[in-house]
Image (cartoon, rainbow, N blue to C red):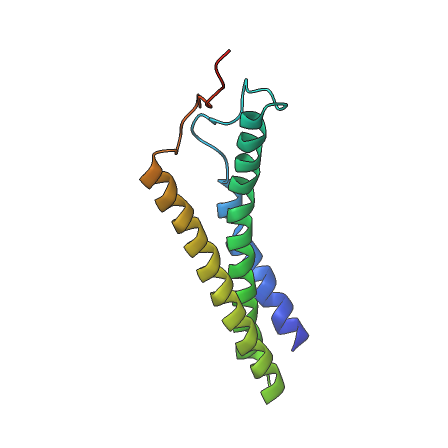
Length: 128
């Protein structure tokens, strides 16, 4: 049974190789270039860049947990293994739904208030 799981994971890893090979940024990266990190704008920009990197990784992790649950459910011989596989599938679906919903909510808010893709933010200041 362990050999079947190892073969399935290796097959999945080999199937994902083309996706990993083409995981390059083809366009121009518009990030925090030229913004000093010591300012509030620089800190917010850097936090946004980090979150933009973390969200796809979390989605991929949730998909891997779901696939792990499917494999455990299909390969599992006894009822306890099938129950664990079912639980992993449920948690994977919940994880995907929560991450995508929060990501969508952030996108709706940024489009509603018009704060997406702004390079120069003019923060209000007090007059002299």
